Amino acid sequence: MDWCPRCDQGWVVRCRVREQVDVIEVCEECDTVWLEGQSVSMDAYTDLDPYMSGIGKEPLWSNLEPLERGAQR
Ligand SMILES: [Zn+2]
Image (cartoon, rainbow, N blue to C red; front, side, top):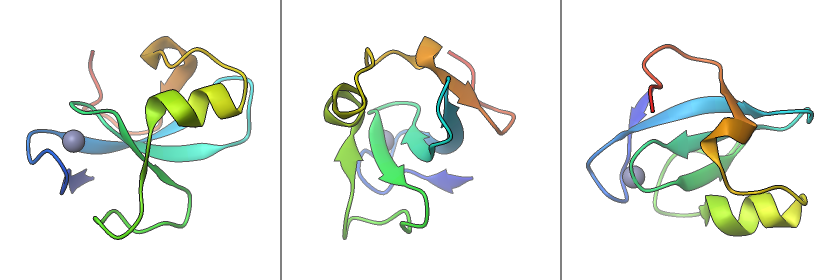
């Protein structure tokens, strides 16, 4: 897991979006999203709200399935 370079307060956790094949990396604290294959850096990122609305889902952690331990909310 990477430490979030944006908020510097949380871990970036790999998650699968429920009912989707998409795997994203999400900061547990600030909900910054990195897409699969994107390196976790300040060069490129998005946020959970626009990402989830882009695929027609509510921006809720209950719609995400953590693929790593340590993701507790
Ligand atoms: Zn963060």
